[in-house]
Image 1 (cartoon, rainbow, N blue to C red):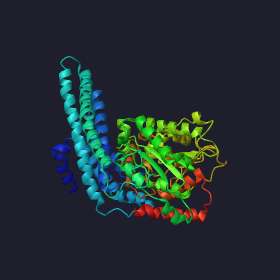
Image 2: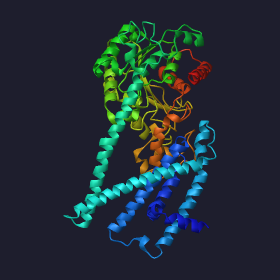
Image 3: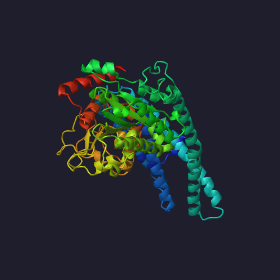
Image 4: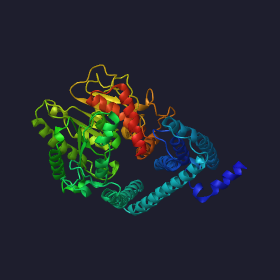
Length: 558
């Protein structure tokens, strides 16, 4: 019965036309894509990933068969037993698919359970298979369209060129056409649609967030910045807590109102004008009179996460001023694609303007100066300063969370880590300048005391934004070797090309994890970082633990 069903299945015109080598490799790629990676995947993205993986393996198989024929060798499928071999391969593929689909839910649970998520649903394999089949079929048909165009172009070229050269010319012509359509039409249209969507969101004014009445707040009547020009993310950053009353209620001690300056993209025409506006607003509200001054570089969307700022303002009883200048309103990956240098230039100009004025202040009374950024903000914050330019009068430190894998200082410290430390939690030299931490506070493990400049990296082992590697297509990343991070599946394995696709999908899904995993950094972990960097006085371990619980409850409620 099974053989008869398979024969009927193979007699279908589309299925009969499939390349046996392509189906075999596609099945192996599909099976590998079901294994766990860094973040959990719901059934739809898993189906898309598995379908794309099958299509990639299938394409490689077709390319290998084409190369075989190009070299003039006999096609295995043309042998007398070719149909039987194809049937046997189909049986083997069905067995592999069934076995790996049966294991897929358990593999996903090995990622979900350490993050506190419930197990996946029982009907998942069926839906996953349908989504993957649709995705793989669509991509294979797209590949066949490419082949059709290439053959047509090769026939035209064959009028004046020998067969093999005309074949190469046809492939080049089809590739050029697909690239022109993809880059010049589809990509541009997609980017334009995304830009328009993000632009509308940035301009949106939430009726529940009123302009501040406090003249020391950005966007107030007394401010140099108009409320509507702050942008959606800027208004959220200014309106976020805590205020002085909330700090005093928790600490039981006198506090000041935290100062926050945020200059949106619409506040001024150019980058230098926005930086100048931020600096003048700092002077107006007395930002340089506070004990702690933080230059924050937002994410690509312009967001400053409350979880990163609230701990610092509580720890220092509101005696904190933060300043940020928006450089984009689109997602970080889109910002990198559209204009990868503009954010770094904005961060560099802001740091230089603030630092130059900071140097003119009496050393005994000027605020302690820190840098902060999350994700793309961490990368650009790092690029805002050359440490050789400030070595004579260094700022006090930086807290960078979720740094992208291509961050300059992060990459150097990770590559030059102590050999006995894992790549997901490195120990860099003696720890006097750079230290790493994650869900568990590991900042006290350094062999030397802090120096005058303190840099802390807050990162989770499950964060694909930090641990994505382009080279993962061809070799296992360093963080896969040795002990795994606390929220990384022990079932995770490296597979050529497939692991690269998995990590790429993980980056897109990095914000879908529970807080405290993936790319969502929890306030209680920021507390440890800010305590290490700024050394707030008067905080006992018991009070710090109470603050962590209070902040987590506030974030979960808000």
